[in-house]
Image 1 (cartoon, rainbow, N blue to C red):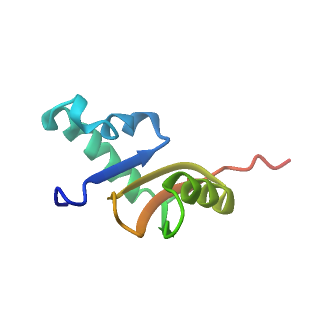
Image 2: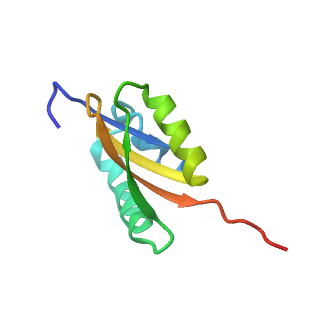
Length: 97
């Protein structure tokens, strides 16, 4: 990423929240979190898709995505000016009777 298109991270996973505020901690402290993220992404329950935020806000795009895919956990990393970005997510586990 360049300084003209800074990287943005959005997630609702508590273990990865540290990555959202990159200026709060040094890179060395984030390495274990990135290792956890790599494991989470490679898990069989984790899926990915692309979201378009063209002509809408990031919050609106994420809200529509969460409602459409019935998302429990998600992680997205993208450039601030990107129209489309990849999101990794896990669906809600429905407790059937």
